[in-house]
Image (cartoon, rainbow, N blue to C red; front, side):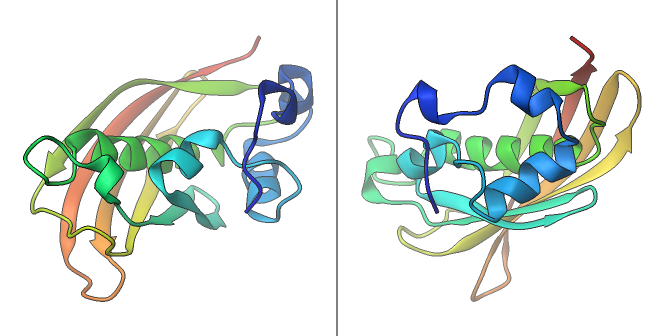
Length: 158
């Protein structure tokens, strides 16, 4: 996985607008486009791309802990926001972009440090101006549900 190392590595808005959201996400998965640097920082990467469906895979590290030594809620939130919003992105047509308006996270149990998890995002609705999706974090080995989430995104035609 090639992560963007500087702003110059990222695609320009014009380049992004010249492809569908699905093609944009597939390009990251195939290594044609650099992955966002937040993935390197938080130790996760794009694992699967489908129509209205995304999976990120990662594992929390000690650097992602709160002062009590457990995985910070922001780690859960970032993975869920990425998966849910990118699921919406797969439905965005050429010439449009999106961004998250709001998201909600429900943490069900603590993820052990170093444990691989899959974060799934699935669209529920994608229209001309909004996209709605839900997500979940599950352990790769144990299949347990660790967190759920929901999001609303705005779709724009700049």
